[in-house]
Amino acid sequence: MSKEQGVQRLLDGNRAWAQQCLSDSPEYFHDLASGQHPEYLWIGCSDSRVSADEITGTRPGEIFVHRNVANLVVHRDINVMAVLQYAVEILEIKHVIVCGHYGCGGIEAGMNKRGFGPMDDWLKNIRDVYRRYQREIDNIKDPQKRAHRLAELNVIEQAHNLCGTSIITQSWLRRGAPAVHGWIYSISDGVLKESVTVGNQFDIPKAFGRL
Image 1: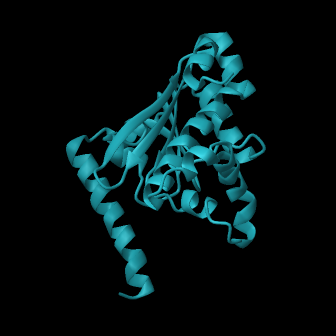
Image 2 (image 1 turned 90 degrees about the horizontal axis):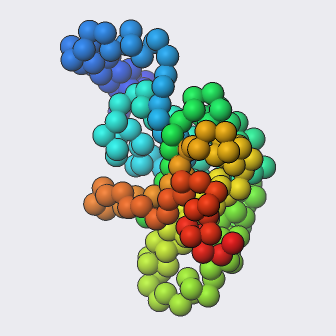
């Protein structure tokens, strides 16, 4: 398949999808164009196998999405903070979901001491999580299970980072929302699992058990 044919496949797929949407609901795109009112913000991994709409059975307009390598919530990252602020303060979403997944290349790279060039600055955030839980993780003999556990712990840490933002804390005081959720996705069976949920500032000590 040539490069041109590869791109054309996407354009053809778009037209087929648009026609199917109109066949199912003639007002579909008219309704979408009128504005978005999602209840959820999804902070997920950039991995091509983990699509928020696809794995949750939702449609365009239902989930506001931000994705990066290893689903990180870094306070100095203006991109994720801008998305969070827009979702919480303008869209007034009700739930923020941080979703990691097993088999995450970013997690596995973060456990590797080998340098990765410019990506090292980003992977440092994974290595910080690894250092916090190093004793627990290193006691796991199976390499795959070690990586799986770090993916789970990373989700919990990123949910904790969310709860520490002024965007979330001020919104809790103002309107009692959003709830913060940490999920993990298994690519091998397609199932999502909840790791942590925080409904307000009073849930933090119970949810994370270390504050």
